[in-house]
Length: 216
Image (cartoon, rainbow, N blue to C red; front, top):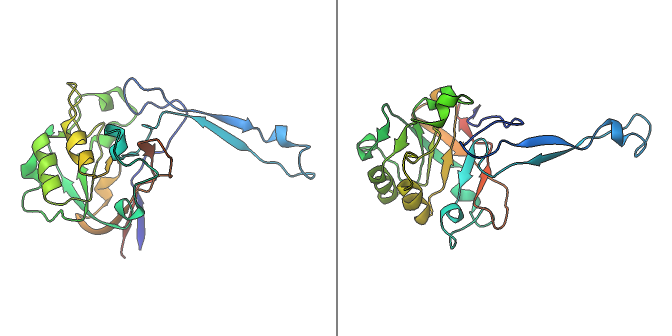
């Protein structure tokens, strides 16, 4: 068995999405400050992080888009773990339904590999990125995809205000994972995908330690 990390490391100050602040990571209780609270030579650090939920590699639940949709506390584990994976390697900017034609996507985590993660933490990452079209989202929904992920800045075209891919997939209860990485290390199929978030009530998006399990 081989494990492959498909997530970006979260670091202080990093920008994931243009216009949203990077995380602030600091001590709540510093190691030196803990001296005297415990036995001699026993110290602890308690960290604190302040961040928007759209940080790093994150999962979108229906509540992210729809007020009546399932939030992080309501998405079942089997919707985000132990999913048979399928990597679809795509070139170009607008990825249409034809990219998935003839592929068995039913019940699978469909991971779109564009290679855009090579620009991570650069200005180039934040604009002009590959995205799915509405037709692609409709195809994946109708073909029974269980989850859809992409290694790009957004699964939608952000040059305008519409977000049809989020709207189509999340209304159908299909979770989305954005800002994936290392998809080039995966085979097209024959692996298991996992991206469970914490169970937070009233929140629709959160970072995940997305990873693949490949049978050896």
